[in-house]
Image (cartoon, rainbow, N blue to C red; front, side, top):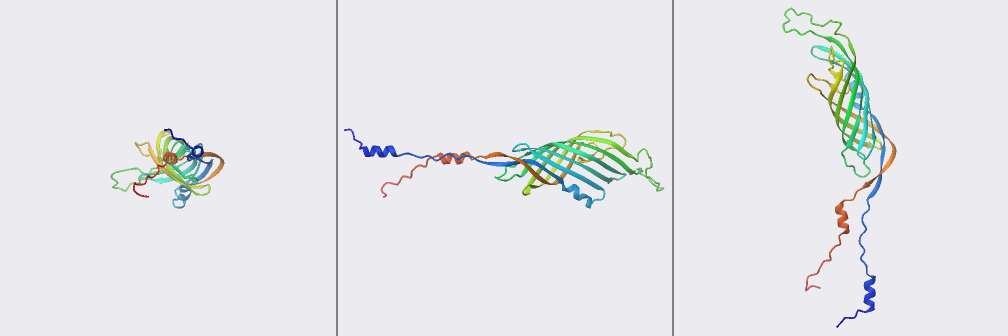
Length: 260
């Protein structure tokens, strides 16, 4: 026998609906883009402790995208060094240009950096041989071994050097728009000119040049200020698991039989 459904039951069923939770929308916030300029503090402080050194390095970077920055350093350096058998002085200017890639995933509102980068470096400098000593194994009569050849004791102008550089560094925002940074650089000397007579023992920004090696190391500690120019939107992505859990209906809990 067919069961007759009352109009009241049909009306109740038609009015019943299941409301699913809305899909979470990705939050959008704006990140600052602009020019950051500063100086290497280590080159400014070192002359107070070392009378044989003077240096100035200006640093800057420009944000291209969420991860990539154009970067450059420019400066001058003068250094006098006394070796075992000679004393020399190096003086010149340098320019480095390249890019940085930020590997650090910032929290909302943060703009810090843990980055890797690459640079092309160029330096125009001079080497000045100030004095040298002749090396003799047996000096029974205490001879004067100080060199006096005018063709050697002179200034060697017009030296140039080219190198490639790998950079590892960090930048941390101390206060609004003010950043402290540090980096370590490993350079590969590609070419050097006018390497006749007195060799290039030191290249500004590249560092000490060792015989039989084309590698050099350097570092810097920077303080820089960011000049914001504009802002771009960046979505905060919601984890897939959170979205999945939000749209998964919860199964009702069944009561055991025999209990009220």
